[in-house]
Length: 372
Ligand SMILES: Cc1cc2nc3c(=O)[nH]c(=O)nc-3n(C[C@H](O)[C@H](O)[C@H](O)COP(=O)(O)OP(=O)(O)OC[C@H]3O[C@@H](n4cnc5c(N)ncnc54)[C@H](O)[C@@H]3O)c2cc1C
Image (cartoon, rainbow, N blue to C red; front, side):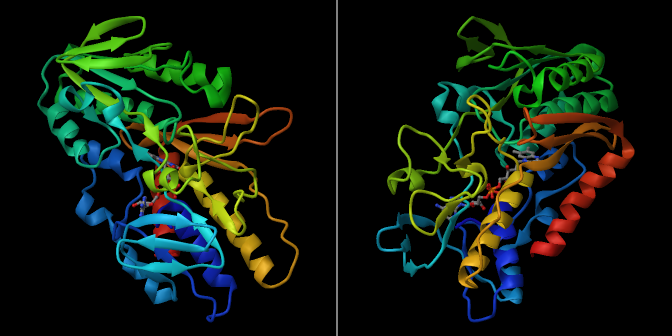
């Protein structure tokens, strides 16, 4: 379930390693795939949605079935999944449904701000920034955890870069508010400081320990104060998909808790990617990122293949990956991550270069070619 990073990676790994009589089906309510990272390129005007989305139907050429319907119920007792029109039986089920954005959890946000992660809002943000001549832009992370921890900082840097192009940069203040004390808690103090310095060098003011409680016209309210803005760009709270909650998979709004095998408490049911929570220490979880959703999808697929072939299931998610930190003008840094390094998770930020930007483009291109 879910034709995003996790679902596509798992389905392809399964298809490449199982005989044709094994039926593999992806169910997604969307009929297209586009990496979320492309939203940043729509933001800075170097890409358009229409040419970036790829039809999920393409996977049928590989012998993977595609069902363009919304999953409305998961019933692990009867090993079935329901959509509005049909019921599907499964032997193995991979839940890769991602997250739902929940801007409604912050009163006033929808009326008074724009949502960076919402596809419809991104072109609006782009156009407003290009038209802005002076004033205050507030960017705010409004809930934890959120997808791709460095992405809001990339957006801030790209916005600064657009303003430098339009000539309005000197008259526009950018303030960045986060509920966390440092920029990237999962990356540790050193990487957080490095990101802070990059932001400072572009005159983006980071305000940690600012938990947003509501938004009013041109006013952002925190637990510990308030500020004014001309344009608000928000990363809203995220929540576990409704169907997962309604099917009784989790309680109390928690993401599906799994270990490094991604097995849920139900037989032959796995949860990969943003929909799950894999704790690394008692405080740090694997961040919600496509690269990890992909790694988890492949891990689960390998264990399913082993089970079908009556071999030993010995794949565990290695927690290794990397994420680009785009800094504007076709440059990027690279965050190299090893979540299960001993004695503590390890993140290193490789310096900004044009090469890492090319690597980011390649990251998208290679996966689209492989998966679809
Ligand atoms: C701006 C931005 C930039 C990012 N940049 C990066 C990056 O550079 N590198 C990186 O690794 N990650 C990045 N990410 C994070 C990455 O996009 C996510 O972590 C990744 O998409 C998670 O994959 P997933 O398979 O868990 O979920 P998704 O890719 O979100 O896929 C979930 C799928 O499930 C479908 N679905 C949901 N509910 C239902 C239902 N009830 N019925 C049917 N279908 C359903 C959805 O339509 C969707 O296609 C970025 C995110 C953002 C927002």
